[in-house]
Image (cartoon, rainbow, N blue to C red; front, side, top):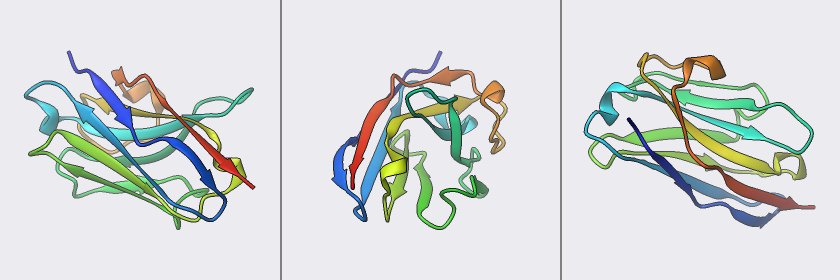
Length: 124
């Protein structure tokens, strides 16, 4: 069992930056691929970024590729999402997720554990 806790959300002006962190419980964090997703009101959960178990492979949604960066620190059981040049349309609840498969994936069905989410609001 893995428990995930996100932090770093809040209110930011358009054009600003935020850094989300996700801390995982358990001793097998370095076996899991990690992903970041978001869900805006009235919309489906959307894939943003993923990183494989070692950190050697990452993938991004086209909508955030040039602005967001995912990273992980297996020694600290953490994964981060650096978000730059934020836009009003980035407003959503952001979730981190863990996949036992270990490979970077953009599919929600590949993820076994989810955090509770953290709200990001970007004011225009």
